[in-house]
Amino acid sequence: MASNLRAERDRFLKLFDRLASSMTQMVELMPAERREAVPIENPSMRFGDRRLRVTAKNLFIHTIVAEHCWARDLSCCEDRAVVALPRDAALTQRLSSDDYLNMAQSIHSNNIESFTGLSEDQTEKNVSFNGSDWTVMGLLWGIYSHRAFHLGNIDIYVRQFGTEPADFF
Image (cartoon, rainbow, N blue to C red; front, side, top):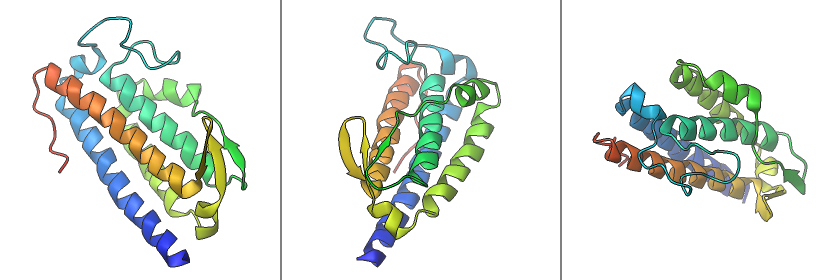
């Protein structure tokens, strides 16, 4: 059983790293001035009450901050822990600079290192996040899905702004 968890974690790491790389490429393909534009302005162009202006740059920063928070929290949580919504205003502010792509790569590398360091016992722990119960390993796949969802959002932006998206596959 334990080697299966290790194999699953390793599969997650490989796919997650590739997904993150694809998102970075997608954002890099966009002209810099388009990264902070919204192709369609209407009341539904928001995600909850936390992000009122949904731009490619904001989505990109949101994923990096969320993953940083999850990597930090999952690496040391107890069994049956409640994992908080990922918020880090200071990190979000730092990533708002012009160097956010380079900073994001460094943070992503640290996140990968943290996820790599998860023991088999840690990945088996049960946690609650946003009203749902997960194992830590299950939440890692949820994190992957979160990144994939926002990669899809950015893909649409890239296309709406007339740029050919990066080839994920």
